Image 1 (cartoon, helix red, strand yellow):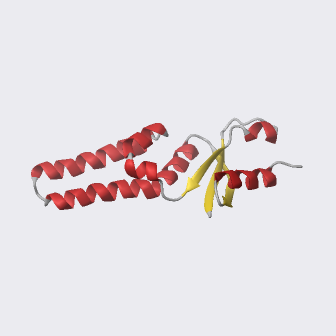
Image 2 (cartoon, one colour; image 1 turned 90 degrees about the vertical axis):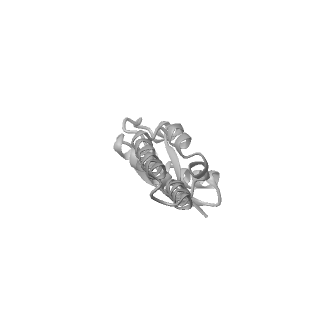
Image 3 (cartoon, helix red, strand yellow; image 1 turned 180 degrees about the vertical axis):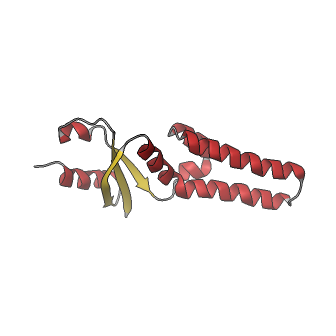
Length: 128
């Protein structure tokens, strides 16, 4: 089962059918894109503050590597931990950024895949 949260932009239309086109569904859980392509994934989703934090943390780890205070294996583990943290919390960072931009969370939907989650949400949200 997958869970998606549903978000609405700040200046949405009055009619629910018109508002449905502007909704964003964000998956809750591990993100392979964030794990493998961290900074590019942050850029693609326009997550500027988390990108600055990622670059700062990466720079701090590289500074420790250059000083040779730690064994290179520990540096590799730190970089792996940074990417895993981003992979597990990337979708939370997306929700946080949307909330900062004035988006409103409408609810959540569960299903086997994204299409089923969307169908379930719209069946409950749009009046018949």
